[in-house]
Image (tube, rainbow, N blue to C red; front, side):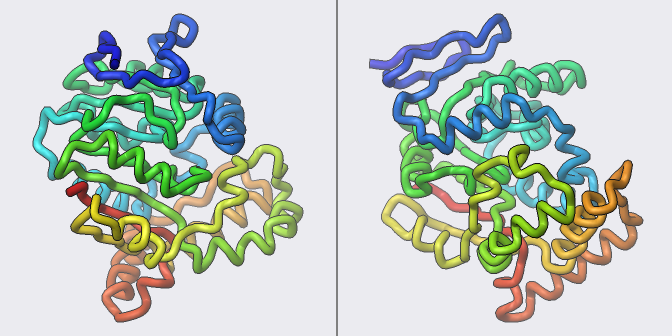
Length: 305
């Protein structure tokens, strides 16, 4: 049995029925099987209202260029189709699709979705239709089978405790031929070794580890081969794993290190010409065999058979 809610998306019967969150227009459907990590992430992000544009420097060219690649991949889907974003966060990416697609925006944190909804309406974001906002766990999606033409998540996949289960859930809710995009996922080449230096880095930058997302603190990232294994079964086809940031990544994290260590009032912004030069040089380096494995992040595109 399934329930057809007012937003027009079929909700699969689960261990918890969808309920409204306060008077916000946000749905909550949390599984009793949600992992402890997901619960901690929900609590963390309920109380984390930092400006993501500033914290992640989303308006820098080194970010705009690669987010644009993600957007263009998703926009290959015909307009008017149904998209699901897992880990919608600030809505930075969703704003690109709302004018042309029917959207379901999810996050493990209901308060994040409240802030997201307010931000989209305050900015008078153009919308094809009012999106549905659902607080849920990406490893236990409360949607019926084959609901969506496209699913995407940006800097979110590494927050799961069970990657295989998350991929299986996405495959379940995607229609045949549907597109999955994983954007800006960390490369294990750098992030696994960085765990060895975490306490030292926290100390010299004055970072309170209790204010860091547990998933971000624990994650080790992925190799290209691990993505090939995850999507190597008979459910998926047309896998593309693309590198992101080499020199631009070093610059990004060094600038963040300087900002935190010296407690600057504002993050350092590079001239646009320098930003574009870094990205162009990185793209040249990635054309050299073997160098793409030294990227800082990956962008993954794959289709369901």
